[in-house]
Length: 93
Image (tube, rainbow, N blue to C red; front, side):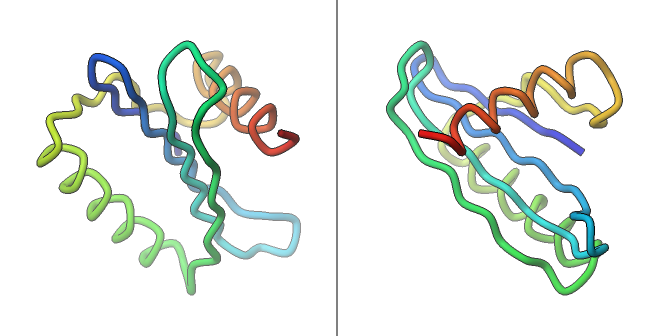
């Protein structure tokens, strides 16, 4: 699952996925739109339920900051694949 929020200048992107060992990973990227400023953080969740709880928390935080949700999709969609590519670019910086 991939969710992206944006303000006028900034973005936050969350990717919830399983790794090759079956562990649930909560990846969060943030930064300024159109620049390479930002960061990337990965967290290991106890299970899928905990990862979804973190996603709900993130949604609450971003709404309180005035961010609007612009994308919610699964990894298998074209939009999801594009978002994952953006995360992998950040991972190598």
